[in-house]
Image (cartoon, rainbow, N blue to C red):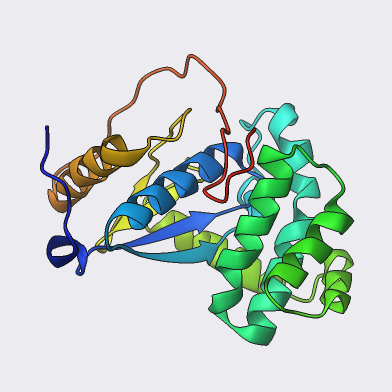
Length: 219
């Protein structure tokens, strides 16, 4: 078994997660990263992207994915407006709130989800009006291009940057806990550190088990 990460060995570890909050696979990856951070020192930066804009003009994307991601613009537009207003510090509380509502509680009222997320970030809920505007669409398109350019085309979310090297994934169906979470993190940081590594893949055999958030709500 890999040795546990300690505060002294992880202070230089930094990950960036490119996320669209409607993606359940991304939520599982985020919960895994939070599990690592809860046990050991780890810096997690969040960056917003949009699956709706990513899927524009991609006929190979199945229709069953296009409809929900297109609707997700109602959420990512509000997050973009909040970040533009108050800075990147709002991303984590908003994603925590949205992920719990959408994936753990299986909520589908996007207007309610936006108001709850804004409140969680300490912002006025009047910013929820951004869901119906295109004011921040250029910013979202640019952020999405940036996320994809870090790994190459034909990917989605999650994209995780490990100490400066971005990979598509990991795609996890269940949230690793405790030492298993740490062992996986150590393995992937090692893989990412090798400049000639490119791809590993196998068929998915189950849907994501969204489990529970670290704040305890069971799913």
